[in-house]
Image 1 (spheres, rainbow, N blue to C red):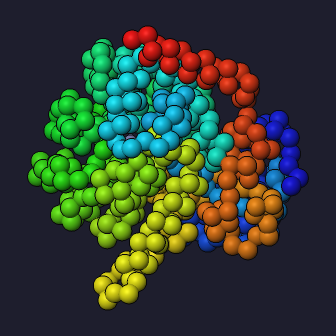
Image 2 (tube, rainbow, N blue to C red):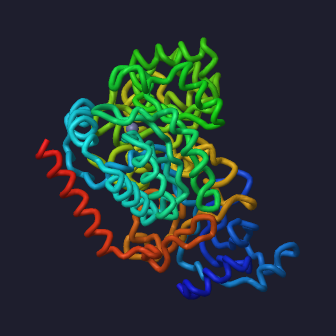
Image 3 (cartoon, rainbow, N blue to C red):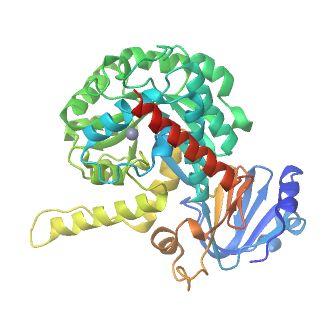
Length: 467
Ligand SMILES: [Zn+2]
């Protein structure tokens, strides 16, 4: 591909000179904006201004396209960036430390009880920034950081500053720690955090409340209910609720419905093993859902089956999420492929040799929709990102389809979902800013980062050993 220099691109973006991506396969993930086997995407500043087969001969956009800086995207796929709707970013120095974790209890005791209490604010920054940069490298342009190690105001500030420093579109969901001594500043500190960081980095950073569905893991202080609902309402923020599974969560959901606090400002995470009544209440209330397919299946949360069929039956198209890098992969390709394979296995198996009704098999296009637009909706950013829709921000990927693992290009959605990985991602834009360019993260010295990450990891381990 023939690309201008990063300097020229950055200059065009900041001077609002139009930028024309031309000749690639375009996947919009917007039902009202058709995909194009080859086509153009026009950007101006932070925004997508047009998508079409040939904008230089389009009467409305010809003038802008003619004056544009041109990015030749022949041989590539242009798609929306992925949206992660739930990850605990602070843990990232510990990534893959418990790859064969037995169950949720082992994770809770090893990581949340054993390690989280020794984290310093600087460790929070290092882990969160590493997660965000890795996300960007693999094409995730928006990451919701479910930040549940807020041991002090300084810990929260550091996690938020890491989102700012990485340049990702970041949603900081703030929750108190599960165990150990802490400053008891949460949730009162949320107001200060909102003042300092909501809308930071030119609007790329936003905040919300985070909670658990019940008091089973960490006591009543972090269990969602009328008290936390009132705080979120007063702050004007959404709430992400983790550890939603099984009978206790099903009962909690029905209770929230009765209390009038089950509403579209909630994102319920996991949702494995919920009762049909709970699902019906969620569908009626219009909540969003974040599935964590590998977390559910591999760590084994409740039934261990990602609840995609239950969600679709309730009229909810779910977003996807990474959850914990201590035991799981970092990227969205893994989530899409795992869910695609698991759901189709179950649907086929249900139909095999029986007369029972079985769910329809989901498609690669379904999981791509979950990994982009539906995640954006769960992150309260459905009007801003998640699809290549004129008027939305330019959060997009240029993915090489002529690399050895993708050639020859036969089906763009299939190639993106089933064939691609981080190495194929040539360019990542967040609100039109280049975060990855020519296959490399922009402004990141990998050797310095490695030293910082390794140093933080080593210091954490030695503090745990010295306790
Ligand atoms: Zn989680």
